[in-house]
Length: 305
Ligand code: TRP
Image (cartoon, rainbow, N blue to C red):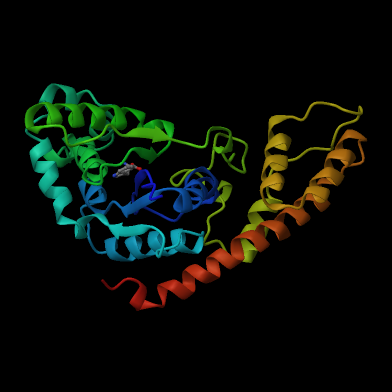
């Protein structure tokens, strides 16, 4: 029986270094999907040109994102991993889709309003049609599922509208794409300073990057906020302590987490020891990825066509 796999497509902007939030929120889902689906994962260099017109660092950034994804477990022999601008047909489909979208609806997208507010000097036409280019990425592959975060739901709704309009005008060719996530597995990684989640642009000291060295990881983990510990057995954990336990659950062995849970509940917890343990386990988790990224970045053959 030849059951054709369903098609999955997603894009990653080549801005900045990937962090633990990207790893557990996105990449880990891609890795899970690669056996079950026909996957297309793309580095969105054209999208990044809409806001970062300086091309000097673009190539290095594209290479780094590719290397970080491969080192995190994406297998280029199983998935199509490509650079957006290399697939010219995307731009061609974008042109056709642009005959089906309207200025009013594009001006109303959250992303356009945000970008105009942040950078009123650079309101270019492709910025206005950012979601149309994204729809072209997706529809080109006739993808059914798009693993993305909540912030991209509106873009998918627009992609569905464009697909329907295209079908209405030219015949039934494009399926509707839908957002996909592994629900409960979509862990939000808290930032180390206890404010919000890890993010590329905010406080660097509160974010663990896949490129961080052992010393940097140690320093960041040791700086996380704790207190004197509970004085009553079975006290609920304050948020900043809950966050540390969440990080432990991601990288420490179960019995280690259980030991510290028990220490917490019996008011004998020593946060200094806990953080040392977390730092070492975090290093054991990140270091192999970081080393593989470095090795890949020195292996030109990976990036040649
Ligand atoms: N807009 C996405 C982001 O900001 C990146 C992206 C470009 C994308 N093309 C895509 C995501 C296609 C999913 C599918 O992260």
